[in-house]
Length: 245
Image (cartoon, rainbow, N blue to C red; front, top):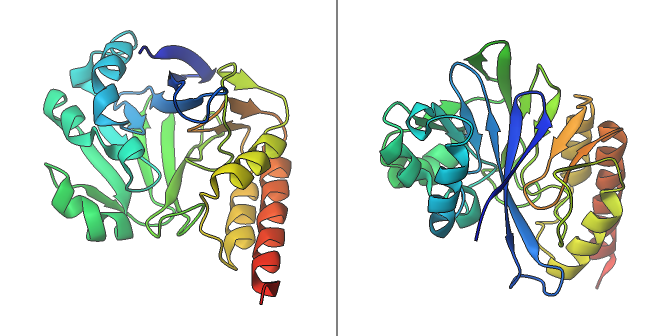
């Protein structure tokens, strides 16, 4: 197992680990993102079993002990399983997450108390880097879900949105909506609810320039259109589920 390093936007790097045993023969990628700055941030702490390879990969970018912030989309093993390992090697690091995630999980599970982020709150990473927290409950799953938007590069760290199987380049301009729809059909991983489309369209209004996917290649292109198309698909799924008797 190894982690490939790729820059997906200015100062934002993807650490990607492929697991062949998931969804064979296509396989499945687990991506973790480093936002550089005076106070570097890691988005997705990763599984505990991946920690050694991720720590080694991070060491090619910054000394791991310099990590300042740890965040993720929601409380789930592949997103935050190794958060305490990171807290142990980075003595100044803090976990940062939304109010629900901190209240129901992180206040107890994190070895140091997390920073509670309100919807729209910004962390200034220095060197012109600012990440804004956006609350997205139940999108695509987990009532504690949220995303981060890095303002300088226009990068939306969008967690499990647009999940797809298979591997690919660190960054693509190709369609990510079709593969995401196919993967939803395969895994059925989303919590369908009437607010899905509205919440995803709220992200489209940010008009990001890059979408950083946890599972699949990051995307540079018309991100707002991709988000709206994904919202339309989820709206159709919700309507279909409500019509079943």
